[in-house]
Picture 1 (cartoon, rainbow, N blue to C red):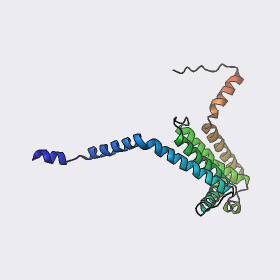
Picture 2 (picture 1 turned 180 degrees about the vertical axis):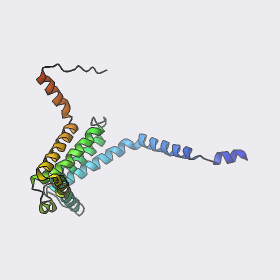
Picture 3 (picture 1 turned 45 degrees about the vertical axis):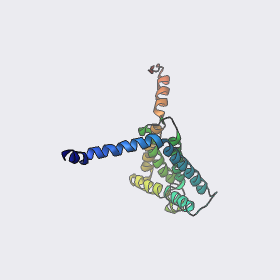
Picture 4 (picture 1 turned 135 degrees about the vertical axis):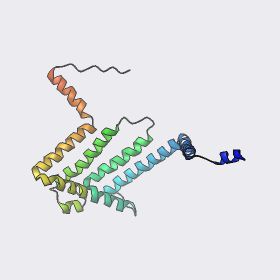
Length: 194
């Protein structure tokens, strides 16, 4: 009688471990196919979105999606499409991507600040933002926020932050360091890889 009670009683941690084991087995057997499928879907979405943004195609779902991207991101909608396509490509790659999380975050920040710079270039007009030009609504709002410090200082601050984020995202600090070492006449440090 006591054996039946012990075998029927399951602990919460055992149930959770079984669920995680099942998920790990599913990922081991079908994970590659799921990543490939999701990668193809994201690349197809990026391509269709790009064609809709360029007014080469229309559709009942595609046209509202492209209008939404244009309204909120303006010309930066193409950056969103590139990010979606890159995400699909990264999922399909068999080798791990060399892009670290910090560089990815810096590139996302640079893309976000690009919307503000596009709005600055267009004069930060709300009418142009509503028409899907420049940085869209997000770029207009971001520029309005930075311009609270004054148009000149806000623009300089926006550009400076954009430049720092872009250099960090593209890993240009290493190139700048090498150039400065060469300019100073010093030898570059030798890095031995195991």
